[in-house]
Length: 267
Image (cartoon, rainbow, N blue to C red):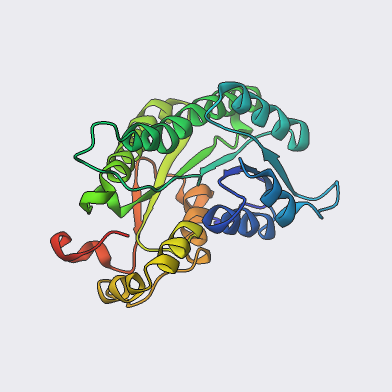
């Protein structure tokens, strides 16, 4: 079974920087058509704006928390590449929660951004995939959705209350959507990662330099992963090589989740 994604069309959210950008570029380098989606239009233009009009990588700027924006993203992808075979929900937000502050809105904000937005986008993309499959019949490519989660779903810290709740919700959404979409042949999986040098972690380490040593000390492989180290796992789940894999959450964390969660900081 091939792990190739060449000729497939993928939407990758959160693609203006960090993990999302690494996934988008990797997919494009492997021959996929990629629509990069993010709220940060300037960063998208800086990273991808010099591409020729016929390039296999394009970008779309907008707030995917808005239903109309989701519809416009899907239309833009169809206009550019005619179909959608893969969705990678790589956009996510990390913020701290004050568990004792009833005015703290971070739990709701993180649930909306990290669960409801990928859910609504997945629903709309799945409708398009199902239509494509019906039209293509036996030649249908079916479709694959990959969500990016975190080991914070299972290993948390007090200040990560909202982020942990959202991560757990996203993983359960992955399993539930896998069951719901299985009759259409659409697979839904997730990658849960530990410490990856994303834009948010870079910012955190910049203001708390001791975090790097703390993270590395509590990771069996004793280092922080680069964004590129996640992309092969995402490609595998998106490819036909994982054609009988659905509802799974693949952990990519350098062994952190093997340790006693009480003593493992989840940055």
